[in-house]
Image 1 (cartoon, rainbow, N blue to C red):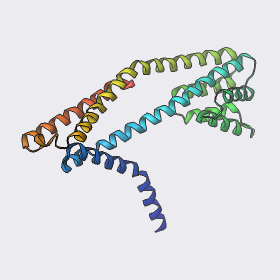
Image 2: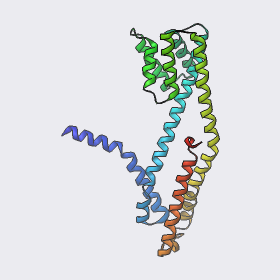
Image 3: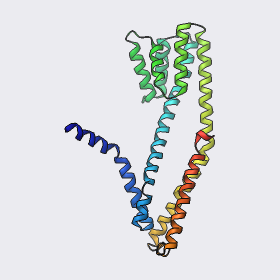
Length: 247
């Protein structure tokens, strides 16, 4: 029974954000249109806004993570050029990154964990490759496989590492350039999305009966619903256009 209660509490905490988002959207639309039924129909938009907010936060975290990985590639390539290999190169890279990121981001914590495992008589290349296999970024996976292959097959470690690092950094630079191209369109979409709500809220604050003439007739309510559906479709369409996957 206690186990079921614990699962129920965790489930409630998990969906608490969604419930708060729906409640907030309901109160907002109730204030804007003064119609309970319409506010209930539009309240699921709060979940969409919450999802987009979480995606934006997750994207920012991934960006910071990959920025640290990109700096790691640069420092690791410098270490390889200086003749450092294996665990020495990783330790050198970690020390360099700590000077740039004194607060230690997520990638630095992962790198510290890799070095901690390597101190227990494990090959650092194998440990890094295992970490890379669990990553959702192709760049990290490729670099991990490349390091393991070079350590086992041999070759010019310095040139191969530098070449692979340059290719990965160039790919990441292209992704950043693509995001910059869409930044203006994303900002315009956000303004277009928020501006009608702000204007309507201002009109309702100045004149509470602003929409009374519109919502008092069936034709007016139908026209309002059609307008809201069209606005919603335009927002969804704009989001798909501004998606970096479509560029």
